[in-house]
Length: 482
Picture 1 (spheres, rainbow, N blue to C red):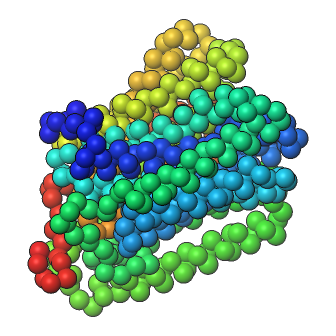
Picture 2 (cartoon, rainbow, N blue to C red):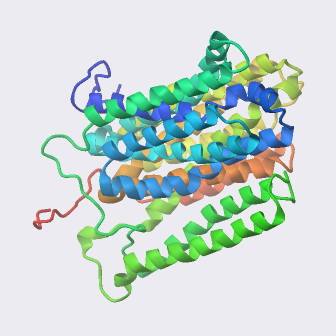
Picture 3 (cartoon, one colour):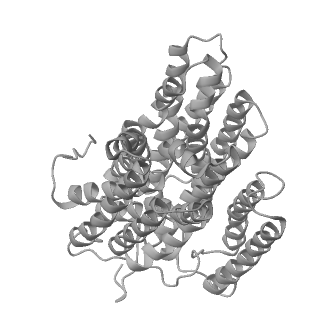
């Protein structure tokens, strides 16, 4: 598939690691979105209102934002083999509790906890980065992300039929528990078969843990600034659940969440200072330096790519239904094309980055994304349905190829911090989803698409300040060897 001819039918060496890891990510996404296709049955079992169903959808993505940051730190310190196995194991247990829930409060609590499994994506980014050289890492990360991301679509296709096969009013419970059982079994398989690095390679770890390392005074303040939107997104989620919106939680708990987020930001700032205070008193050696602007630009790029994907996938079926007066089944099938593009678009985004230049391809793909959303903003009931579907699929290609292009660069920023860089970029994807869905709650679908296009133009300008990765990174071993 790439110029280095990856043999995807092999099951040895780095290809085996790729297959083991994308399937782990696939299962994590299946568990993360296993409730979505069964919401009608869940709603009937618990007699939920529309507001209570919306709350389940919101809490499912809330914990993923901090989880991706935390998992990024853990994977850099302990290695992807242990952390991915542990994530699948723990999330399978939470999944069983969700399947056995006997009250709405238990549904809400376990769904909130399952947001943690959405951080699984970060782990594989570091694993694939360890096993593949720079000339192949883009396409390998694209295959990992694209095929793994398909887990949400697989849930949508398989779980309703599985629930019917089990039958009865508890069929949905058994279907959800089945995904947990598969994840539980695979956690042991992954731990047994996966390895952090090829034989003879060194797994480089950050010198300190608790926050990302930066290498200049300016980058210290830039890092603090870039942390703010993640806390703001969580505050928006609390507002959505609070008395001013869905009224699922009261005024006192909502205010407590706001204060808690402020306290967490202050605490994280203290950790950033603890890890990086040396930059104010001494020069960082050249070999250890990197530019934090690289991380910030990739954050913005993932904000508009993955962030818009999550938001559009959430609203597209209803958009097709209302615009073209279709049935829910017809609208769902037409809208599923957006997610299906993951299978090919992400790998090709990585492949093109490997072959034609990473900065150039990211610029081209974000431009295509902006144009695609501008076109979607023009869709009305007067359009032929097939033309609207073609426009949606074309836009989706640029969105998901852009995601592949972002993560073709992430492993080349600073090797020993790849998990943290991936975690922050991944968290910004969720921040984008929260931002765009919040906008959508106030405006028409057409304006919603235009807002995404505008955000993409801002990201495109930012990408022009990206430094083209050199294709290699340098680290110093404990004995001083470079």
